[in-house]
Image (tube, rainbow, N blue to C red; front, side, top):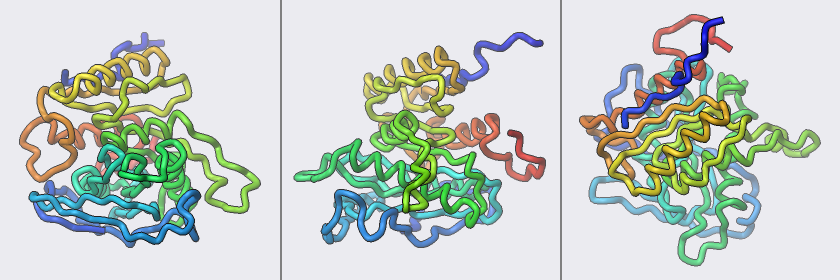
Length: 302
């Protein structure tokens, strides 16, 4: 048997529709209606009727806060390959940057054949927030993964190829969804809660609290990306996390771009290498067998 390449997994390079999005290679998908994750109310949000707040930046980006009814917004591909990703925006647990860390990424993925679901989750660090990260925000992320699996047959998704892609605070949640997953409650009266909450793979893009990432041997495979000129704790924490993945024997790929700062996300001008990270994520998904290359009609490898 050929010797294993020890560097196999190292790839180090040290609902709104808005204008200015990246160009897409396939027929453009459209966002489907928003789906509320819990009915009649999310646990811990009973009785909260306040409307969400939306502000628009000078660049035309939508930023949401005051979330009490967590939801997902689906972006379905015109022709899907069975893969799916829950996209988790960041915003420091105070707000949600829904465009460049949410809908832009989801639209791009859907145009390439991957169903994408943009998560709105409850925010633990808003002023006077009643919520906590692990009890509410993480519960929302886990619920989103369960909902996608529960409706996988309806949506043409392989329930064994459901991932999570998180940015900044959303990256923190994507990691925690992998680390704190459970297989579901087989006897739950809620069929959604019977689903496994573990993502099959995760993408962590300049994730918050990256130094806390401690993968075990059963952690989900991970794509890791940040910029060298981001905060020191994020860059160094993510590099250390990659080494922990390697020591745990879990597939991981790390990209450290020379520039891009914090929050580069998916915006309309991908002229710098950091602006093309999503293509690297797609390459990784295809290489790992989570997605197919565009136009590839061959059977999906296990």
